[in-house]
Length: 84
Image (cartoon, rainbow, N blue to C red; front, side, top):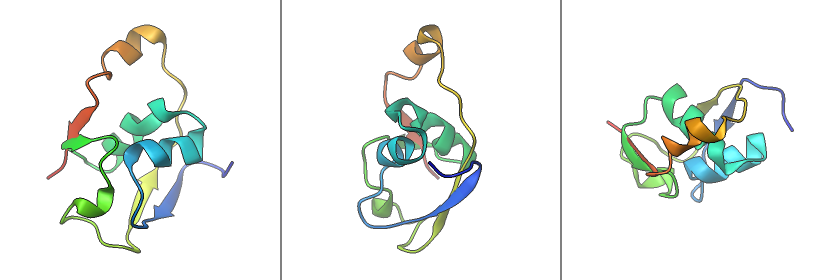
C-alpha cells in the first residue's frame, strides 16, 4: 500500500468505495475520502466521473485513515454523503 496521505488520479470506474479498498484495504474508509474532498450527497458506490465536479485525470486527496470502531461504523451505514 502507498504511504498516506497521497493523491489519486481519477479514472472512469473510480468510486469512493473502490478507492477506500485500494488505499486502505477496507471499504469502510470511503467516508474519510469523501470528507477530505468536500463531498456532499454522493453514494459511495456511484462512479465519481458522473459528477460534473471531476474529470478524468483530475485528482482526489487520499487522507490517512484508521478503521473505525463498530459504534462509529453504525453512523455511516446509510451509504451517502453529499457533493456540491
